[in-house]
Length: 419
Picture 1 (tube, rainbow, N blue to C red):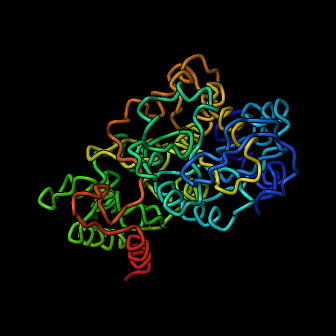
Picture 2 (picture 1 turned 180 degrees about the vertical axis):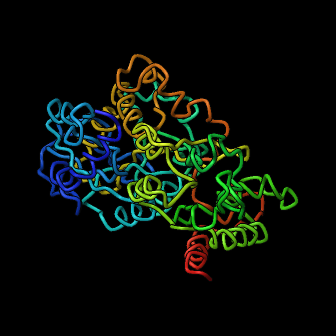
């Protein structure tokens, strides 16, 4: 079955997926059971579990669409069934379309959800809000196999208790870049080398304007993409970190986005809608995820992707555990399972992402010998990974002041609304 055929099967089976994977309204009740020990200090900055006991019968996970497959979409892609058989933990999945939706579900889901596959623009918010708990790495045997670039990444490790040692608030899951997806027909087979094709009005190689034929992500974190472009094209602004913007830098990014709004055919967050737009000819260039590119490129359609010369933003997702997780033993068992090389490789093949465990790049039938290179494993140093903007510019002792994430949200909503 081709990737495009798999997509069609996926679209046709969405309701079945929801039913098969569990209730999309979220989770289920605690079935009891389990005998994992717990700490007695009650310190929220310490893991609440010191040993993994018998599973409680289920685990409730908030995840991106396509992140947890049980074979009901394509039997070849199943990293749930064996886990359920081995542990007795039924996997219930609630999908989310944006990081903001994930954060809201977690904040409102105390006692309901166990885990979330959070991107960097959600993870720090979840930590700051005491919504997630540190994990006990001694209970996750495979943690040492995680890519060293990710093991202590700043978007999920924080010294919350101030003792000089960072706490780990989860286990890395997958990572990838926000690529520039483009129509090879519109660009006459020559890859665009700059994000200017989505920020500046211009005539494309096919002779038509890009106006109305480009798209932009509708999450506030997209402001960082504008900042990344300005860092290269307007160096006088002094932008170093696209997630740490002072007032002038932030306003310059907003001005660019207001200019871009005149070009936008659609602000997207639904990967499937974006794929339809490209296949139907309604879009020819946009920031996108490898997930979409893999599907429509694999279907033999005239699309491809590139990381432009200005670099790219990206995401590195972390499986994080709720402070009120009702099934901690199953949650720990799942985190360990998620780092299995075959799970990591199969998921990377399905989603178009890069495994958090490098060993997964070798010998995986679905991913193939060049799968990790195709998905961008060599691009790590070109990526500015999503992280939640903070008023202290990620340097609390520097005295610097940056625009916090809440202002990113309100201002980007205004840009989309034409203000």
